[in-house]
Image (cartoon, rainbow, N blue to C red; front, side):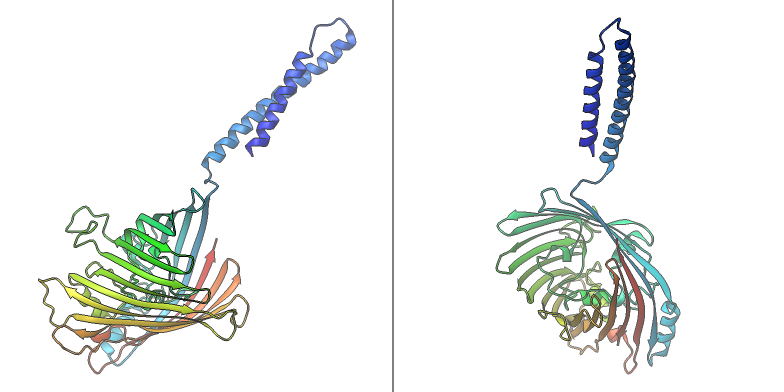
Length: 447
């Protein structure tokens, strides 16, 4: 924009100089008439030069306020109407939960992305986020008595509803020879892996099914962190990373990096990817206290509130057909966890070993080109053995079904159903039942 304006200014200046140099005194009436005309042209040229100079300065001011050419701004808004139905023979729990979570609600989640590259290969990502979902808002993917059916609400617990906050801030740069480093004061654990070993889901409903069947190993922790991965051209990759959820706290008894109260997770992943399939193995060391592990039965979550460490293993992968049709893509994962507790904790009756698994199926171009049909089933983290030798009665199955209608390139509408068979796990009274059925309509807008 500035180059043509600068050229116009220069041209007008040359014209004015030429007119001025041509004006020599003369007694010839005809020449005096021509000089008068030239003087008027000179004044017009000077006025035009002043106007163009002002325009040039204004354009410079406007360009100084715009994003760099390598900065991209995009947004994602999710609008959700939903409700739950709680049933079971445990009538006191059913009545209490209906009173707390029984209303139909309408909520939103808004993400604003600012991505900048300085070299064309690196990435500086800033994500701003706001929403009004919370524990009592039962429509956001089925919030209820368990965190299983809430989609990444940690940002709201820290910032409050309807408040914009920095949800991501990290820098990622290639180091050469296949290595990539990531560092940031606000980065998610899943941002630090070379491979996310799942194609499911194209549209999130239950957050549980975005965690590759191993929600302890892939635990979604958000905080200050760093990661390094290596990728080969043949498809192999190795990733290692660390995230501390309480890294912004200067008091070691409350947080910090590498402290007993950091709410941290450290992970190593080995993965292999081909055009149609991929597989990965991961091991994570997770601090129990601090809410790092969220997606488990209430019984298991109560155990993990005690100080200690959990070693979490995960095996995950996917396969997809060469062309969309009746055959869906298949994403599956399994997790196994071993939990140890601090010396001062009485371990009797606490969770020693736990497991999880999930299978997700996804049909692209289902019924109508551009639409996607999805279904997933699995078990969030549930106890398989206890300290002291007691047999746990901890289990819970989760299902979801959804159909994403792609109205346009930037607008999608997704009706969905989900079911939690026993979300309280072993906290469900013996011989009693308690379950949760949810329905929602989600509108997603990209801009």
